[in-house]
Length: 167
Image (cartoon, rainbow, N blue to C red; front, side, top):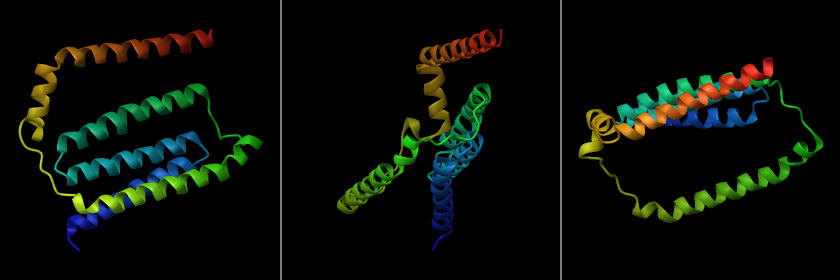
């Protein structure tokens, strides 16, 4: 077993374990922490693939900014431990059946398509961080700024709504 395969297996196990923990946690803050584990392990997988920029964006944007937003909303809503109702207790069996069926479908699809899998290499303009940044800040500067403006409007709207509820 090569070192790269060992690191891949560890990161993949971390991602799957974090995702399962995310679903099974009863407290929303613990679920958010599990999601951070998933995001960090996915960033590690991106690093193994040689996508340094995508890994950095994964950690900065999803692991940082989005998780701060999730925790802020959880604290704003004052969400505690989830209350189980009779309907939520009955949903476990069909949900488990659906998960098993979906896992079987994915396994069958992968088994049928493994002979056509070939390694590919990303070359050209998008292969490097410099190429991505040039395209993002030169070719797509207006959509980038529009997205920034929309995020600013959403933050201001959330602040106004939070202040209105306190009054």
